[in-house]
Image (cartoon, rainbow, N blue to C red):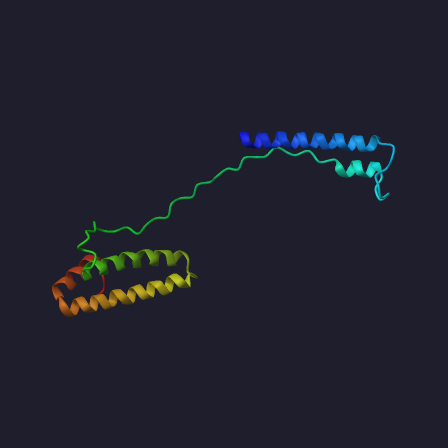
Length: 146
């Protein structure tokens, strides 16, 4: 606020100085050289309009973007397991599905959703082929159609 007041004061002083110069030019008996402008025209051109005080801008804070909720605490050892990856893809798929219900024309997100569904399907097939017990636990916990 102090900065804007200083700017306003400086502008006022420059306006006053230019007005004084214009008065001096108007009082001189000889017109300016070149004959193109008369003293009265020179005075009109040199006068500067008064500057309105600067208004402060208000900053509006935006709401933070919600992150994808994770259902369980992740340890460094767990992130590579197939069941964790399936769970992680499921959480992302649910959030993207909700987003696409509101924004039906977001085709880039729709493509990403389809890619994630395919990856999750491949992981489920792998788990079903190699560890049937873990597969059944994952399907039951995530409430997926098997």
